[in-house]
Image 1 (cartoon, rainbow, N blue to C red):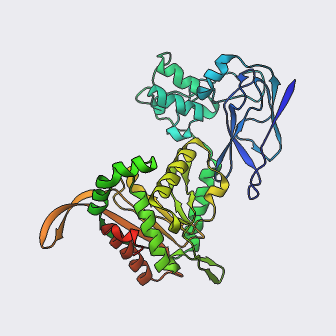
Image 2 (image 1 turned 90 degrees about the vertical axis):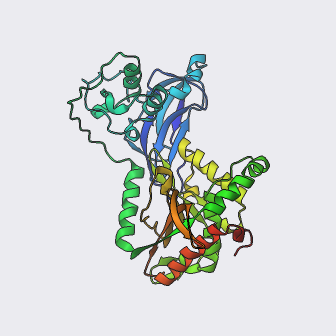
Image 3 (image 1 turned 30 degrees about the vertical axis):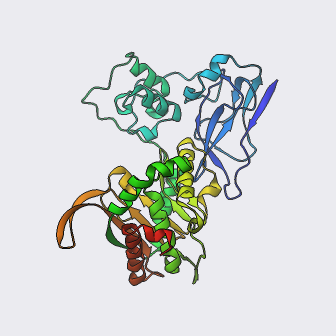
Length: 397
């Protein structure tokens, strides 16, 4: 019996989705609840699981096609799938053809320039096989490196590209990347953005983490990180300087009486900003738990559209990748964003003595249309003072 696989009901604000990748091809066995396909919207990637055990009988749309909610995308011939199919689910084939006949392989072409351009199956194989995709000749569409290319290269069945090769590859932007580009240009063209900076001595924060970290993890089941300190400091400062937490709507300014703080999370497909709602009411443990959950969901494609909507302020941490200083871009309709950076031991003067201290540059980019320089600087100084005296956060000072 043929079972229909349809596009799930899309969120109200999402009109359609793009087929990012098929994890199975026609004729492959599938297991119930095994992910068949990734559907990419402007902000999140949706997984479509198999409703039954069986064999993939027909694929209605190839990768790159645009589909809408409720649209038929595949047929599965119901029946018990071989046990091997379930065991191999994590490394399912990354590419599929829209008909039962396999497309002929093209001659080796240009390789993928970066791992984030690979289909999920190929990316997984590259990581587990410790293979650099840039060294692999692609045989997929438009020279795309496939999972099979990675596996064959790791097994020594294909030779690396010659050192003198000058490969190029033209790849269409993903919907998420195109949306990110659109929003960045919107921010640049619609806000009067200015950045102020300061530096923070994190010695006391690091000492607190050292003294209380083990007990915190024992009590809450999660590590005490740096981000919870910055979130609490920002939430407290936003209560004192509400204009930094405001947004522009036409000729009106909307002041938000709550701190819904967006946390920038980097994924293979681009940057996403899930929201910590009412951060001013959250404990350190609540913040760390929420961030850990969002990070896992972002990596696994489990974020929902509502997780990304409605933030009033953003924190981004370029220090994760070693950035010493940057000027983060405001995320409209928000009016400000706080940038964290890497921690470096630097010489500072304290009580007339030169000492080495763990220092971080912090930057606040803001919309100068509604936030004056004075308020921006005082906001940033308030965050600095809280982080250099972390006991103040516990008192909301």
